[in-house]
Length: 189
Figure 1 (cartoon, rainbow, N blue to C red):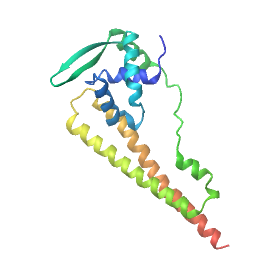
Figure 2: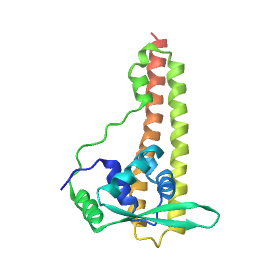
Figure 3: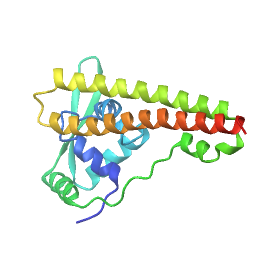
C-alpha cells in the first residue's frame, strides 16, 4: 500500500461524510477535527488536488445559482480502499504535546510564584471554556446528528477530549495547591 501523509487520510475520511467541497471540508474541520487534528485552510485545496491526481477521488463541478461553480469531490473505490487500509494500520506513536504552560512551569523557578499561579489560573479558565465547547458540540451531535452513521464515533473522540480536558483542569487545581504549599513553606523558614 502506498503511504500518504495524515492530512491526505483525514480528508479521505471527511469525504465519506456529506462534505464534498473544499469549503464544506474546512467547516467540518473547524467544527470537529480541529480540537484534535489541525489542518490549515491552505492544506485543503492542494490535498484535494493531490487526491484527485492519485485517483483517490473524482471531481465534479456543481453549478450554484448566483454563485460561482463549486468543485465537489467523491471517493473512488481506490480512495475508499486506501482509507480502509490506513485505518487498519497500527498507531505509529503517541502524540507529543507542545504545551506552553508546561514549558513555562518547567522553568518556573525563574519567575515569581504569583506569575506562575496567574498562568495556571488563566490556563485553567481556558480549559473550562474548551470543556464547555466540547459539551456544546456533544449536545449538538446528540440532538441534531444522532441519526448519522458516524455520530457514535464522533462522540467517542469528543469523550476523549472532555476527559483529557477535565483531567487537565483537575491537574491545574492540584498544582496550584502544591505551589501555594511550597510558597507558604518557604515563607515560614
